[in-house]
Image 1 (cartoon, rainbow, N blue to C red):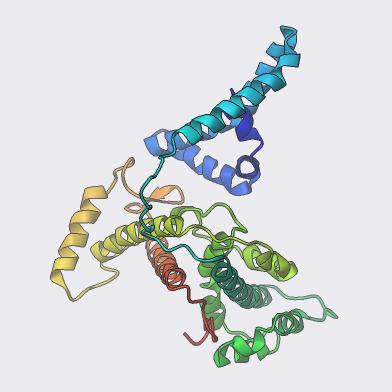
Image 2: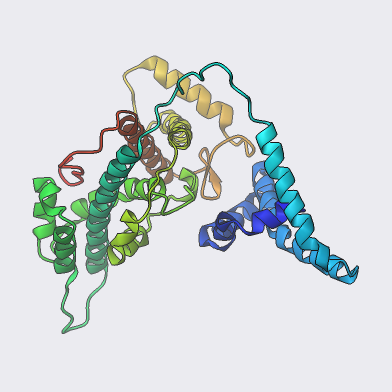
Amino acid sequence: MYSLFRLLIKSAYWRTILRKATWVEASRSLRRAHKDKRARKHLLRLGLLLLAPVLCIGYLVWIWGMGAWFILPIVILFAWLFNRDAKQAGETLHIAPTPEPVRRELTEEETKAMRHSFAQMALLIATMVDRAGSEKFLKEKELPPGIELTTRRTHLELLKKYELWEQMARSDREAMMMPDGHWEWPLINRVTMALEPLRLLRWILRIDFHLPLIGQQLKGDFNLAHEIVLAPEKLFEGKKLIPEEVMETGRDAADHFFQRCLAEAIHRGYYNPSDEGMTERARRLAQSLAGKQDRDFVLGTQLVSEAGKDEVLWATNLSQRRRDFLHWTIGRIRAAKPPEPPMVCIVGE
């Protein structure tokens, strides 16, 4: 029972329960539950999370009804002490010098420098992506007469305030200098692709505690950039980064997703690699997973083998970007080498 009470005081629990994406994912799992045991397991885990407060409240009511409510703090204290002692007892006593860890941990100063550099990069990307969102809106909507656009001016002032203007690639600066409403669709689309690195940087900087699967975030969300433009200080407030091993897990998961989507794309003829062996391996992989509701990866509510061409190609591109960006980030952290100017070159990459 102590573990349930401990769960309820963790901020991660309430953020999981209250975030919109949790319920979007639950809705998708509900639609697939009749044919996919993974969806049923997801719903079961969510149900158990939701049951925790009910069990705790019921336990408190029972204790109160028994007239033993006054011993509850004592029980919780003893449980906490027992849990702490058990954890300490499980630690190994080393007589000989302990070997050096396989992973070299960053020093406090190295972490601070790395985090600051990633925060600058995130702000730079967020500003450009927010501009792309504004340009997209202007392409699709007609503003009422008399409305004065200030997006460009706001972004330029923000970049200069945080001393990022001189760190930008020349092509990116030229794009940001263009008047509002003058970006064309190729430029808008190219800058919008930076939403994935921005999502990853928010996660690495611990602004977002959850990184959704590729198949759960196929649609871009310009709010990821806009809320940073409105409150850029949040990027620089923290002190830690996501652990390297967690980044490796995210990179490997993205690579598995990329390999699956690429195999499907090759099997359907969207790509024609020169290596015949690669084509044959892709065909075997795609055919082995086709229609397997409990095994194939999911894009939204459909299997990769059931998804349309646009969805498969987009997921292939997205998973490759995630894999490559995390691989690059891990390399920087291992070398304790923060990105150097120009840190980001979205337009002219």
